Length: 399
Ligand code: NDP
Image 1 (cartoon, rainbow, N blue to C red):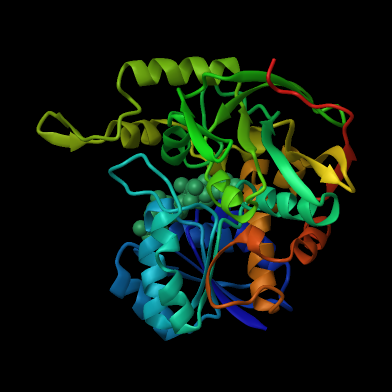
Image 2 (image 1 turned 45 degrees about the horizontal axis):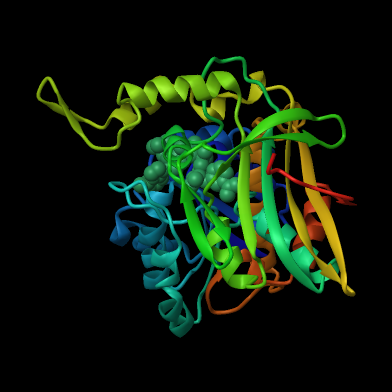
């Protein structure tokens, strides 16, 4: 029996709220809080059990801390934007509440995301006897747990990791992003970094492309190597990794639009003066693009996200692929959302459940792969994200 406050009423916030509401024996009291309370109320109205809503600006630490002190929740589930992470962690420390998120901190004025800022809170959380679980979405999140699960059950030592995120869904728009457009575009236009022989190697964004055939008939897709935040913690927590790469599928229409928008300056993050008003181009672009939380009814197809690990077991080389496939329309039927928000929101609920049940409970700031992967993997099968494992004879994305 626990009380949680979910912060952020966007695409992911909607799914987390639905999934927590499905488990009243764990999440006995739910408060959904966001900048705009009407969005919280709209989500609450979709549920078949009552929850409370609240208005809060999570960037205002005293305001959020006051809400936490008044409500005394057991846990804050942060599914607002990465810009809010440190403010929400500060409010949790002030009010003595555990914390969970799905994306690492990113400063608003620099397109740079890394764990250093949140790792710097380790001592504060430890001293306060509080726990912060970082990156409990799908990627990061499930992909980190997949890596830990493979390392635990299939290998003595892991050497190479390829995380492959394919979205085989189509929403019918020439250009739209599946989660917050600003965060999505900042992520995919960033320089690529991958781990190679003990260090990160930088290459231009989207400069390495490969072809990947998903299992179970999901199809063949062009995937592009890019930097993704889970690489940073995985290479620390699995120091035997010699190479770690992250790949994501993009359609030609998405890439063409992104190139043009970049060329004309619409993806810029620095304010420009327009008729005496300061406008940030990427924020203006976000206002023009479809809201990701409205893509659910029109998105068809499947996601296929997984990890290919190469390593050694009993002296023999081995390659194992662990993946999860999710149908967009099935997600919509269950929680009125497309699969990108669904595959993020379910692991956020499961991470919260792990903490509230005491299965994962340790003061400090932790990345998700630092805990026993088994109970999380069991719950993925139970709560909508069943996964599969297959051994491969060979695997090569270098051609
Ligand atoms: P949305 O933009 O749809 O939703 C964000 C929500 O946060 C909105 O309701 C927004 O309010 C609210 N919010 C923003 N700023 C504040 C603030 N200062 N105080 C209170 N509420 C605020 O984003 P998504 O739902 O698509 O994404 C949510 C998070 O999930 C992001 O951090 C994203 O990076 C992460 N994510 C993680 C993935 C993973 O696999 N790990 C995958 C996809 C997303 P308003 O409506 O007023 O703007």
